Length: 377
DNA sequence: ATAGGGTTAG
View 1 (tube, rainbow, N blue to C red):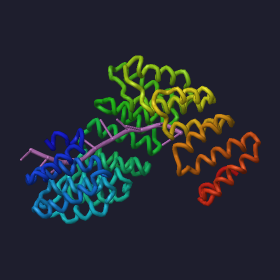
View 2: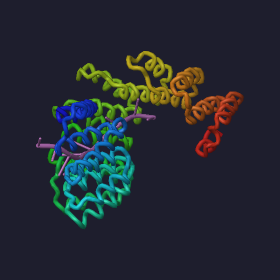
View 3: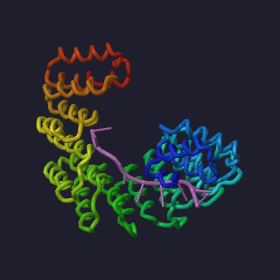
View 4: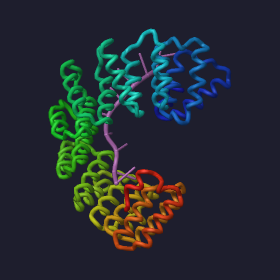
C-alpha cells in the first residue's frame, strides 16, 4: 500500500507508515526505500519524518542495505542537505551507478552544481558513467551556462558511445541553448533518432530563449503536424516566444487554440504569457482588463508583469492600481516594485511623486540594499 | 518485492 501511493501521493504513504507503526507492525528492509522516496518527493513537509526513518534504519540494521543508502542520498540532496548526503555517500563500503546518479543529480538540482561536477570527475576514474548519470552532469552544465564545458561533455558522450536516448538528446538541446549556442542545440535536435513531446518542447524553448520567435512557432507547427498533442509546458514555451518577439496575433491565435483545438484548460502561466504579450506590445489597458477578467486569481508574477508594462509605456493610473494590488498580496514588499513605480513617475516628469516613493523606500529600509541604489536615479 | 532520469510565464 505504501508503494501504491509513494509516487502519486507521497504524503499518504507517510500517513500509512505512521499508522503501521501505531499498530505495532514492524517495517522491513523493503519498506524504507519506498518511504524515503516518498520523503524525497515532498521534502519540506517530511523532513523530520525522514530523519527519524534514518535513525530507525540504523537501529534495525537496515542501514547496511545499498537500496536504503541510495534513497538516503537522494533524500538528503532533495531537502538541500548536501553535507549529510555526502556523509552517507562517504560511509558506503560499495557504490553502484545508482548511488552516483542519486548524488550527482541530487546535487545538480539543488544549487550545488560545482559539487555535482566534482563528484562526476571522481566517478570517471572509478566506474564508467551511464546515460542516466550524464543527465545530472548535463543539468549542472545547463545551470552554469558554461559552453566550453558543455562541448566537452557532449564529445565525451559521443566518445563513450552511450545509448542515445530521447532524454539525453533533450537535455543536450537545453544545455546548448542555455550555454548560448542555438546552432549546436539545433544540430543535436536534428540528429536525434526519435523525438517526443518533451524533446520538441525543449527545442521550442531554445528558440524562444534566443529571440528566434518565428522559428519557435515554426517548430511548434511542425510538431503538431507530426501528430503530437502539445501540453501546457509546450504552450508556455511557444507563447513566451510570441511575447518576446512581439508576435501579437500569432500569440492570440495560439492562446485561443489551447482550449479551442486541444480542449485543454489554460493555466495561470498561460495567462501570464498573454499579459506579457499585450504588455510588451504597449496594449497596457487591454492587458489590465485581461487580468481583471481572467478566471484564475492572478498571482504576484502576473501583477508585476503588468506593472513592468505600465512603467515601459508610462501608464501611471494603471500602475497605481496595480501597485495597490501588489501591496495587498505581498506585505513584505519588494524593492523592485518601488523602483518600478518610482520610474513610472520619473518617466513622465512627476518628480514629486517619484521622490515620495523613494522616501517610502528609504523608510522601509529598502534603499540601503546595494542593488537599489543603482536603479531609478 | 525496495533505489537514479530530460522540458515550465517575469
